[in-house]
Amino acid sequence: MQKLYRDHAIVLRTHPLGEADRIITLLTRRHGKVRAVAKGVRRTGSRFGARLEPFGLIDVQLHTGRTLHTVTQVVTIETFAEGISSDYARYTAASAMLETTDRLTDEVVDPNAQQFLLLVGALRTAAASRIPPSLVLDAFLLRTLAHAGWAPDLRTCALCGAEGPHHAYDVAAGGLVCSACRRPGAVAVRQGAIEHMIYLLAGDWESTLRADATIQLEASRLIADSITWHLERGVRALHYVER
Image (cartoon, rainbow, N blue to C red; front, top):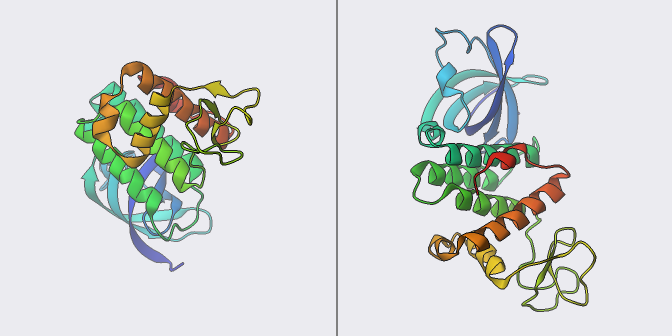
């Protein structure tokens, strides 16, 4: 990697370093996830401190370091923070998106930038407030699972491949299971919840908005359980999401 490079990025999280600096975790479009030091950003006279807050889409210039890179320039491309932070439901849903991305994204280059584009699209949709934030979050989590290679089987049995419909969901198996393959721990699931998840994965907002609250909640629980299983521990922000 060259010493000085530029990329588009989403700020995933920040934490203080010393008296005036801050460590910024970024998901970049072409260089994967990187951690960088932003020097002096906690001072009131900082040139770009406000541009390095979570939910921001930025054009950032970085200098490569051994363990941490250094932020040298920042330009705001689009800020989602105002639309997201003004509403508790949007804020908690968007926070869960950032935390999930941070946990699932290795510090490697993603040649297709799929996770970056997925996160940008989800944050933009959440900030626009036209779709309920819980639906935006569930769609994002399902697509993130799919991008990581963990898309749940929603039409066939995850163990034997038998065509559905099936009425049990096994998180450890990776989706629906038929009656012959059903194991202890699999939970009964209504067909409406499975169809809702299919619509979420496809981004069919018109169909997802027609689902009643109980169907949405049932699907949300299955999605959250699937994320928790693959991460091997829960996403903390999910506990605060309003369903």
